[in-house]
Amino acid sequence: MTTSTETPRDELRRQALERLEKRAEFRMHLAAYLLVNAVLVTIWFVVADGGLFWPIFPMLGWGIGLMLHAMETFRLPVTEDRIAREMQRLTPDRSSEDHARQ
Image (tube, rainbow, N blue to C red; front, side, top):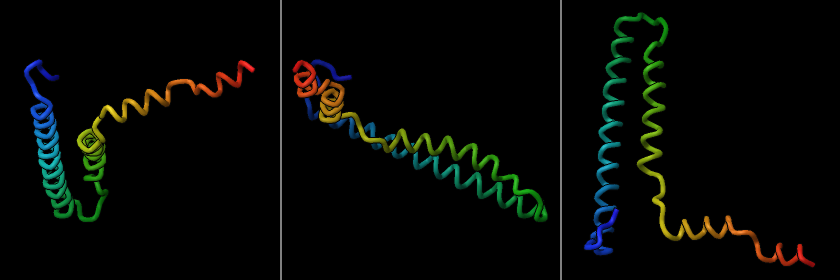
């Protein structure tokens, strides 16, 4: 949210900083996912003697969370241009209204 004293440059800087922080958080999440799952696979390899590949269960569950985190982190930001296009798409077509009246 912008304050009355915040300039457009300040707002842009705040948005850039927020996006960079989200990307750093995602990289840490990805690193934790890879490290923990590598340890789980190593434990399975050493202990399971070829049995059921049980690390797949935490990999899939955590992977869904990681995918959602990636979608939130890397989605396109909502801009005025995107809002205007969506508003135009939602506005009934004037030519179809004119055609219906005839």
